[in-house]
Image 1 (tube, rainbow, N blue to C red):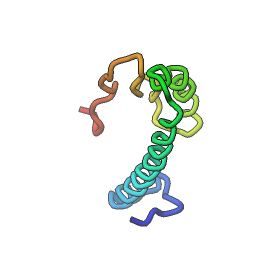
Image 2 (cartoon, one colour):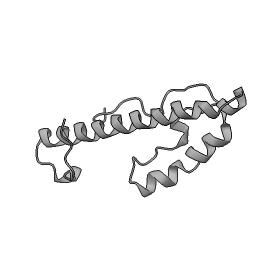
Image 3 (cartoon, rainbow, N blue to C red):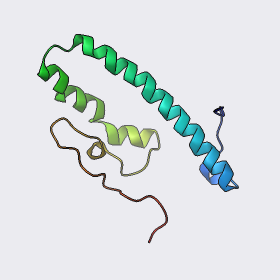
Image 4 (cartoon, rainbow, N blue to C red):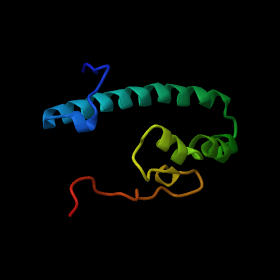
Length: 104
């Protein structure tokens, strides 16, 4: 799939097809970035020798501790924060938002 270099702003889209094309382009970028990230996740295993190294709560906090501020700077969805990211000290939980779509 070709990813346009410049997407229209969401409010500038005039058809559902334009919105869907932009979403598809962003999804393609996300999937590619996750694939690249996973290569680094695999590489870091060479340096982790113990269970504590793998658990790495300090690293989690360093990466996700500033999530609300990063989200604000990148204009991410308001209200997204580190509670929406699985944490090594918490069991996986349901996201706070479970339905995307028109209000009921």
